[in-house]
Image (tube, rainbow, N blue to C red; front, side):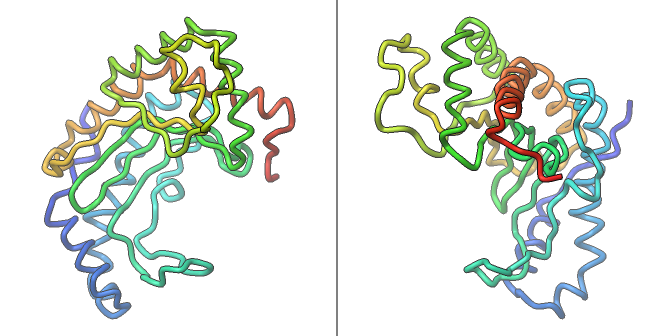
Length: 236
């Protein structure tokens, strides 16, 4: 099956950076269509190409290509930075955020000199994430298998913030880093943006996301517990 996504070139990324540097509505309007065709449209094509495997992983995925791709024009209201335009862009592959706030998600994003993709789970309240810790302790082998799947997919564990005090001091040593984490990220990062300028990126992401499916399933199980216990409530 031929991919819609053909790649995002370094020249296109450079134009996005120049647009941000100018931070000018005039410059943006002059290059708006070019930015759309070289940045926004390819990312929307990525959503279309990824939809099959993502809906197979989770039939509740919300994959409207227009809605799930970030905008070049930033919303500066309530933001300390008043720069109007982005030099980084992203796509979130997730359930509808109003019905399923804070649900785990797959993603893709790029910066001027790198791109990355993977699987993320964080909650607005760090205390809610203790449901994940409890589930790990109750299903240790299942979690280890999910970790192994992420490793096979080429994803590396990252965490934004850790608890300073151990919540499970008697837990197996190999699980302690995850039991201290307040959020989870499993990431593949590439500092050669030429590797983003090819339709093969879609095939790589499909394979990665599929192999990492056991971790998504584990995260989703924890998330459903949070919903059932009322820790996370839908916005609608």
